[in-house]
Image (cartoon, rainbow, N blue to C red; front, top):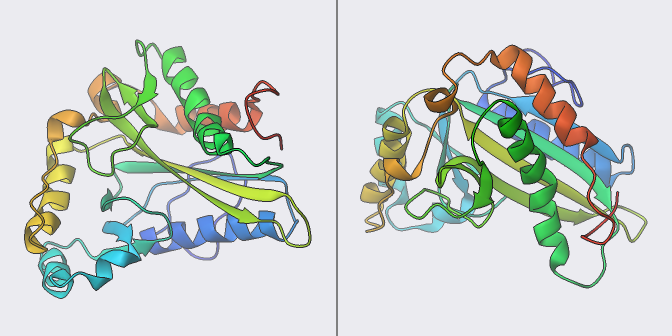
Length: 247
């Protein structure tokens, strides 16, 4: 797409993977500079990449793995958060929320950050008729964590977060991100991640059965209508004052 993404738009935007990742960084920077206390983005890329932490670049087998993925038309991109490689493609919708917060000395703010994203996401799914969505691990999934958004124990949304200090003050800026597979098959995306694992000679393999795509459970869903409602729920959601940081 031409030009920067429209930060805090309620529409789903279509940048490249590189543009989407850069826009999330710009959103966090705006909160760190004190320009906004709350901002958000929803984007789905027009191209595809396997996105991973930059530490993977130091692996002995990385150059060959990168060439192999390029031959598969899955170029490598890097992100600022940790975890294992994650495929980004038009089959994935990303939502990022940046919040200015006050935090204490407890690590509880980390869990609060994930619930700040995951709880309204689960509520949104429940409102669409999905039974018992929840947060939790999905053993066998790539980039697994304790706060995946799950359907029937299978990973629908992977979540990550970053914290940085707001300039000139004691407040913190939180960027929390969710990547939701909406189309394609879990088998297709897991195969890309496993191809990278083979190329770097890492014995760990991931299972398609640990993932689910939104179209698998809501095949008729109109995303153009549904995504803005999800954004509205994320922006409006508020935690109990005793559970963690407050914006």
